[in-house]
Length: 378
Image (cartoon, rainbow, N blue to C red):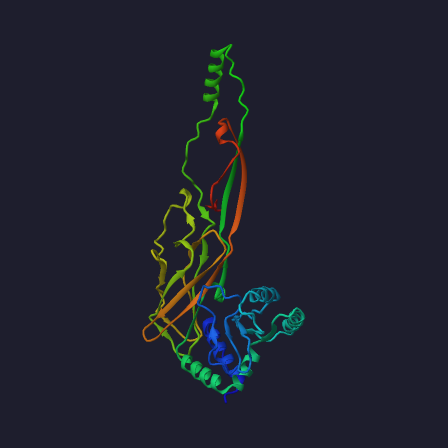
């Protein structure tokens, strides 16, 4: 067999999930091993599951792809969060395996051992972890998976790409800002009308009217920035041996996206002077929410990367996941995959009391609904 340490990590989390299904299916001697649900559905912390031969309860695998170039690790907070999710998986698991492309970490392994004993004491599922070095050993020990994976990697080695968001991320957290005002209407105490001197009362009312300054709208000189839109851009990494020529990337969004724009800024009068004409390499459509990247560079050699221009997405004002499906086409190669956006909005909620004379409007509350947060650019 090929030396284990020469095995490359999968190019994306979908391929890693497929590898785990194949590998643990062979380890468990379970042809019925399956992936759990489809992209975007609640999986309760389980990506792959099956009943090992000779067992009568389900085992599960949680697949965690990590970027080998930035050495990102599986964190304790992630582990705790996933353990809580798995407790909702039905039927209850007997064992849970964390499989990650991150390198081995003694601190994380110690933490897993502690959590494993805690779960066993509570009568819950066992917990184990396999880092990439462990997975390579398992691949080397299981002939069918080894031969399948080596053949797959060799096939991809000549022409292969990895597409990510900024900073090489396949999952990106977005924090759009939204605001809302909750108005409480309360009774206003109206002073008694001075009937004894109606002309004097009318005269004072006229004085108050003319004393109120006249407010006229004026054009904005400052550039405004809409913080409800979040910046994105794509990176295309050629991780194969051969160059990729005349490539384009098509993408679409699966989830609650309200709008797409080239910029989140509205130019003020100070910045309206146009010098030249900027043309983005990202073309956007809002019906449906999708777009394409047409690079000005027509060739991407091996080990080189390309970054698209920025564009901006406005997610719905709620916590949710958005899947970004991409497809790369080129002169003699094509590939496709999925990235994930995790939306965690930043809400600013203000409360306001308003005094009204109409008793029918008192003791009522009006919610303005979530609105965009727009500020002046410094």
